[in-house]
Length: 435
Image 1: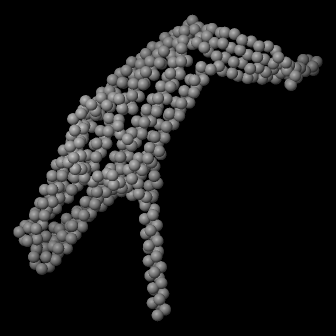
Image 2: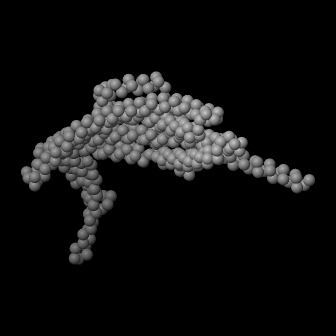
Image 3: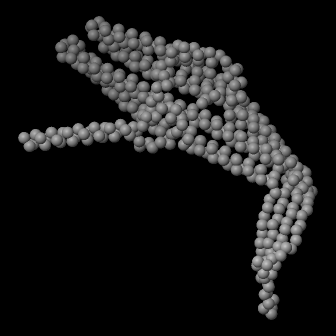
C-alpha cells in the first residue's frame, strides 16, 4: 500500500515537472512577425548603425563649416622669470585675448559650407537607401524561412503518407494481395522520404539561423517566425494586378529616377563636386581678414595693467605656391567629370535594375500559373492512381510515380508563391518605393 501511494506521488511529480518544462520551453519561444523583424534589423543591423553614424559625422563637419564664418577667439597667458649674474630676479606676467576673422577668401568658405550641407543631405539619403536595403534583405530572409518551413511540411506529409502506404502494402502482402517486391519497393520510398525530410529540416534550421544572425539575435534562443499577412497562395486577381504593373516599364523607370535614394545621391555628388571646383578656384583670390587683440602685463600676478589694444585688416595673396593652386583646380574638375560619368552609369543601372525586376516578376508570375495548374493535375493523377492500385487495376509503380509528381508539384508551387512575393518586393526595391 505504501509503495503504491509513493509511486502515485512520484508519477504526479513527474507529470508536473514535464508540464513545467514544456511550459517554460514554450514561453521561451519568441514569435516574430515580418514587421517586427524589419524593425529589429533597421535598428540593430551593423550597416544601419554605420549609416546613422555617418550622418552624425557629416553634421559635425557642417558645424565646422558654419564656424569658419565666425571669428576665432583665443586667450593666452605667460609668466617669465629672468635673473642676472648678481642674483637679481625679475618676474614678468602677461595675458591677452585675440580675435581673427576671414571675411573674404574667394568665397571658398561659403562653398565649403554649401558642400558640408550637401554632404549631410547625401549621408541622409544613403541612410534611407540602406534602410530600404536592410528591409529588402530582411524580407528575403524571412520569406526564405517561411518557404523552407512549407517545404518541410510537404516532406513530412509525404513521409507520413509513405509510411501509411507501407503499412497497407504490408497488410495486403500478408493476405497475399500484393507481392513482396512491392513491400521492398515501398520501404525504399520511405527511406528516401526520410532523407528528404532530414534535408528539408536542415534547410529550414539554417534559414532561421541566417535570419536571426541578420537580426542580431541570440542564435541559442528559440524563435518562431510567422505572419498571417503573408499569403501562402496567390489568387488570379493578384496575378492580374502584377500583369498591369509589368506593362508600365517606362513609368516605373521614370519613377525610379525620382525615388531611388542612391540615384539622387549621385546627382547631389555631382553638385558637391561643382562646389569643390569653386572651393579650389578660391585660391586664386586674395584672402582678407580682420584681427583685434587686447593685452595686460605686469611684474606681479594680480597687479597686471592694461598694456594696449590693437586691431587691423590683413590681406594676403600667394604669388607662387609651386603650382598647387593649378593642381587643386585641375583635380577638382577631373573629379567632377568622373562624377558626371558615374551619374550616367547610375542612370543606366537604375533602368537595367527596373527592367530585370520586371522580367523576374513576369517569369515568377508565369511559373506560379504553371505550378498551380500542375498541382491540380497532380492531385487528380494521384487520386486516380491510388484508386486503381487499391482496386488491383494499377501497379505500385504507377502510384509511386503519381506520388512523386504530386510532391514535386506541391514543392514547385511553394517555391513559385514565395518567388512571386519576393519578385514583387524586389520591384518595389529597385524602383525605390519599398517601405
